[in-house]
Length: 343
Ligand SMILES: [Cu+2]
Image (cartoon, rainbow, N blue to C red; front, side, top):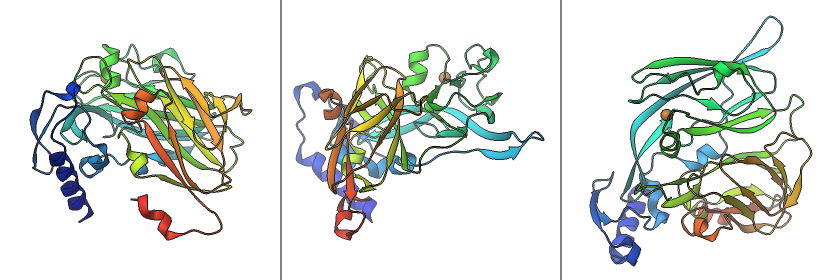
């Protein structure tokens, strides 16, 4: 019912604003997943209504960690086994009328967040069900043969087992490393790899944000940007957190084409750990700038309840989707009327 309502509202919004800006003058006709016929340039329209037709749920992705199948070696070493399947034939409606051929690890962009503890033995069973060669290249420390660069895994069911010790502590990207690299990355073959310190980190409400963008008209410029794939998603579906609760964000910049991205938090500052490799923060700031695959860990708490923006301070990116809201609930009085933005 909610789905139907959103589609209906979405379509009426599109009908109500049939004239796009000069830059969006070339309208084409598309049939949406719901069977409606709409006209769009393939540029972003009104992203408020994208979620009803997209298969990927950014709210679920935000706090989902894959710890693998756990077993122990005789010497006590923890073994974690994961299965990652690459595909390159999926079409996702990333915004109404904007259909994009996503290349996926386990069916989503980004792929699953792989999480382990420093020193664990990781076995990643990689299956390539795509039509092109693919690999998984993990950032971090491992033997040359496990680097996912020179051992392309064949299409149509090719297999490879990446086996290495988890390390170093921190947050790292993983991505396909088959040429042309840019093409394999921008279509979506990337994800996040978190290595926890043996002693753990302080208990927190933890989340992952992959800063990404999509070039949906293939002119080597991104048409829109996001935290976790769907533009404007967390603006229309604010992330609910509590006052006086430690929030930890593992942030990874996977934007291609644009040399920089950044992360600005409103009404607060955060401790920042570049790459997450040190347990002592390097900065206390409300703004970090990240180049390709730069990443780190942000930690903060809100004292005052309310709505706070977070977004790229590169305004072009925030206006094209990389913007969200934290809805900070008072830990002492949880009010259901604050749920109006929740999904
Ligand atoms: Cu690839």
